[in-house]
Image (cartoon, rainbow, N blue to C red; front, side):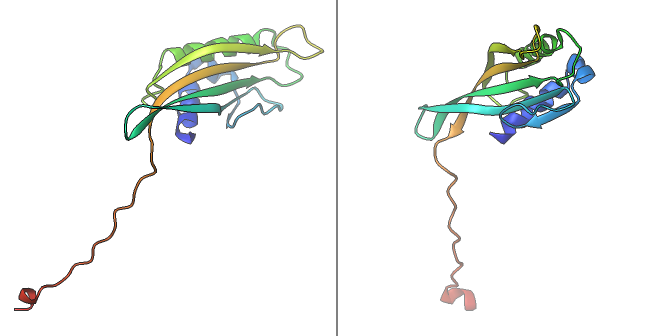
Length: 152
């Protein structure tokens, strides 16, 4: 799962609009409120279905959080960032080959009691990937046996 989270963050870091505003990037499930504009990404849930004898089809939901500082005066910034996250993810649905396919299934905006506008957002990304059903098996080490004919 870490490779997918890293792929999401690296893809978003390359977006021109996000580069301009986002000051902190976090690979974690959940927000990390602070004094900087931050984006966090992490896997919320994954499920598996049988594909063939060796692989399963994994469907996972990743949450990408946008959090603004409590004292932010940028009206509409959370909406702008969430929309650009959606565009960046939609324009590269395989996350540079990290997954088979992905789809932004929604955005939820967050407000605080003191604000009328969004103070943060969560972008929901559903991904599909084929994964090995079994853990890799170790090949046993085979000792070399010398035959009597090897000594001649």
